[in-house]
Image (cartoon, rainbow, N blue to C red; front, side, top):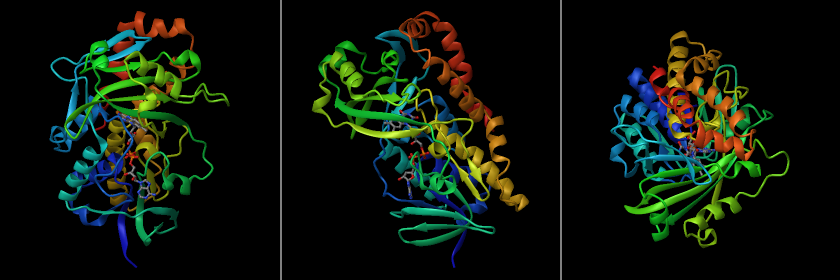
Length: 383
Ligand SMILES: Cc1cc2nc3c(=O)[nH]c(=O)nc-3n(C[C@H](O)[C@H](O)[C@H](O)COP(=O)(O)OP(=O)(O)OC[C@H]3O[C@@H](n4cnc5c(N)ncnc54)[C@H](O)[C@@H]3O)c2cc1C
């Protein structure tokens, strides 16, 4: 029976970051790690691909330069209510960098392989069974056994569902559309800016509509979408297509001319269970940012925290992972997730138009300071 020390289930940013952080501190672990990924790189992943500064800081610490991946730099990010609001610019750099996930994840997987870690593609995990002395992972290609398992298989992940089948879940609904740039969009929007508009909140959609510049195979495109935490759903979920269509129509696009794709995002809730003996969850499996559904930097951050927990567990030869929750809570990542969860429960349930106008247009300096302290720059505190 072939037994690995560490099986990482899912080769997205959280799983790959866990692997990269592990070998950064303990290079001898490389041959003892196996990553199982159900797809083949470069695989499609529905995502707008907006990287905030924290993602880049974490990658830089791993010695990685994301500029190697095709990208678009966003000059300013606008946070609006019905077309007016506050603007974020970062002095001497871009506000957000936009990548395509097929290219980014494939690049990160290649960097992971270069450290000597094996990734097996085209293997789908079906079930995860923790036992006293090991974990059994059932896949469509037979069983694997390991000392421990990292569940990095995303919002719908099998790992979480196997370990905590009855746990409550907080999940956002998200739709995304890719369009050409379009002449009207250029006239009505600055082509290198990103827009987040919270106009759907009074209509019980606890989220926003977005519009980003992006590129596909080097051609400039725009990525549109709508995010709803479901906090205001209250049984009847408002349709998401209408507000998205409304926003796109304002810029000269007909939603019906394009393919609309949807995917859930599991968001962080302090009650989420994130570990069991011999099993750790990272990335969306543990919970992404609830305010925006921003999860790439968060996934990379979980990798850093999980790697530290795993290294210590090996040193102690004890795999209960009972310290993982506390370790996360004390880190910059845990703090930003908690604050974002708290803010989510203020800015969306107070859904009246006057409050949204006050928030995004009138108390701008306060919102900017809070965002700078609590939403951004957390990666500096995960060392
Ligand atoms: C429409 C949309 C737009 C978004 N836009 C942004 C954005 O602009 N910026 C941002 O920061 N975040 C964004 N997000 C969130 C972001 O995509 C996620 O938070 C991020 O991908 C989480 O990374 P992860 O590694 O945890 O999971 P994933 O990226 O989902 O990776 C999980 C991996 O596990 C594999 N896998 C799944 N099940 C199995 C299985 N059974 N067996 C083997 N392998 C398996 C999958 O193939 C995948 O490779 C967006 C999400 C959506 C849905």
